[in-house]
Image (cartoon, rainbow over all chains, first blue to last red; front, side):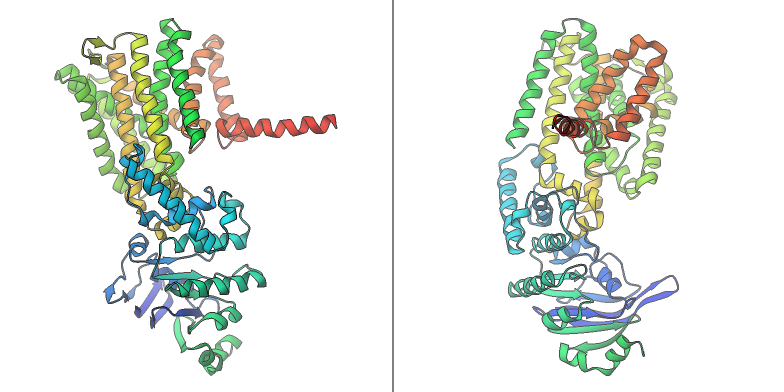
Length: 250
Length: 318
């Protein structure tokens, strides 16, 4: 469904990504792995519209979305989470998810200020839907907590709940397991599968190999900005080039 | 939401009862300015406290509202209500156009750009002598009137201004508790995450800037018709800074905080008048203390101060 064609990203004199091409299949869980500095996060920033690539195209179901800004991609059902969680810290957990429903609501400044009946109706619907997503991620009991006061692991779950509220086609997760303990990581693996079972395509950048090998259907390996390998977890584990890169022989 | 309603009804009751407490014109006149400044502080708070975008040019929007309304009525005999509407729409349209390039800037750069905007407007007031009357001001602005009821004394002006103030507060509180209010606070906390959530950050910032300018212009128009006079000195850089101070002292993102901040900063110079030349020292001291020890503003700071003091007493007893 998502085709990445010849993406190159140059920062000053540094080539962060060099002619990367691959495809993400609908309803797969795809993992993007690679040693530090391989360009994984850069790739995510490009796909999610935060950077525009130097060359190359990205297309979603045949539509060229290379230059779309993040807010436009959100309307097409593409959403992401961040490596260093980007919550709305001063807002409650529930309000964070309610922001995730921004594209699912329409009222403008005037109908909000004058509390039009349809605004009140919409507000009620947003609130209920937000609770549904909090329950889905298992953090509904924290609904009224200020987001900045959440423990790290719960913050990650909130970020996922907020992203799911957009009802995306694809969710990109940037190192969702970073900073989680082993029990939280296991919970995360279950959650990722649950998300896929709802028909959402999942793409994750991850360092936790156990998690990647466990949940992913397909894996893309990047090294020094180039595509090193692509395949099922088993193929990747047996790929000599990947082993070399990870052991530092490459 | 019930608590919001109670707060609002308390405010309305307080506003309605004021004329019974203060029968003298002086205090009523001061309260008129409290009302106008509250509208301005609330307008600025929507931008600064919610969206997190500073403006040091709001005195300019306030002044434009006053002058457009003043010139239309005094020079061109337009109906004052119509003039107010034209002023508000024109100023918000101007803000909308300027907002697109200016609100791309962040932090200090945005502060400088809005500061420049305010100064340009101020210079126009001074130099366009044929239209504005220059530094000596524009006089002969008519009062607002509803049929045979002319708002021409302090009590009537009080009722007029506070009707607008109370409606402004209601609309701002409603907006704060809506998807727009949440989106604005989201921009404040993490612009990139807000964009990923599908919030059109650039457009929303400009819209809220225009709305803020709209309210400021209405306040300016009220000011012109209440004073029947407008001079550039009231709309300078100094006043823009004072508005920012009102918002910060009251509490960023707190609508009632803005009411409080505007009240305090309007009354303080009046109360400190007995100290004559020393008033400016006391005034400055209060500002320093509030920003140092109550960064969340007085509305948040005083309850937390009490909260910090009370448990200590208990410990002392035990």
